[in-house]
Image 1 (cartoon, rainbow, N blue to C red):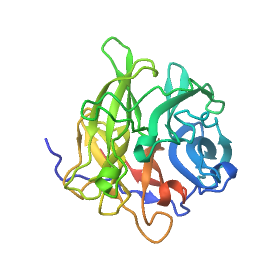
Image 2: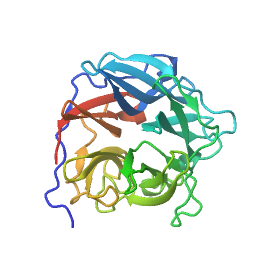
Image 3: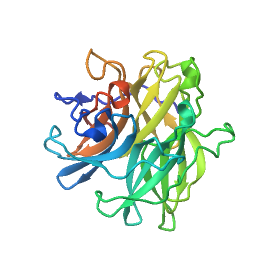
Image 4: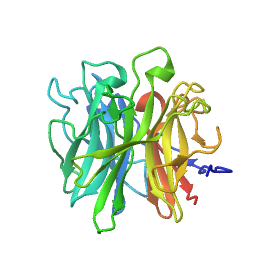
Length: 327
């Protein structure tokens, strides 16, 4: 049944945003983008993609006290970009960290140098860790490709940045569900073609082999802030349903805004009427005046803590906001 009177969270932005601007070191002088946060004790471990002066991007780590998100210790890149010709030879971006089989798994998106536009993002790679600090690549090759969808048989584009959920099974085992982005756009002056993306899922029992792929959220033409793309589903559970925040691209802003959705099963999502689910739009004249994107949510002392990026895909850095939970 369609959701009536759709309600979004009241996100209260941090007064010192962006709390993690570029320039902590040579490794992130160009941007800080794609936050993925894990809480360990009283600290937040913030994984993000930093750009060097040449534009190459690596997965980096910064740590701060939960009580003070303005003081980050930046540890720099946790591994290098790929070798020449590799799927991640240019960029390692969009980290997603989840614990699987007793180890931390970090999934990331690679970009090569030879393809154009969204079709240059051709795989999701994996690194593992025991302590969230020392990381080792699982393989020089990706563990997930942008294939397996009959609607787009020739597509190569794929990007991560969503959630991973544990789905308990009747026999006591767990299946892992990864939410990621199928990037089907091809270079064009038409935003609806160039930036075409939809949220999809794949399932795995070991975090390595992924199957059972499905589209779960598409752009919608009747909502002009998300008529090109709907990506990066970040999901949490309430007492009665699943809720999510994600990034949409549309012709209204010409770039990203943040939107919300609800679901009973994590697969079929409701967004209410157009404009009802628009959560945070570009605003003001400062760091988030042109776009807001790449959301990541973590529970904090009974509330929800949101991390997200501003203008230029992280060129102005990472900010944060806090909200009371909605059912």
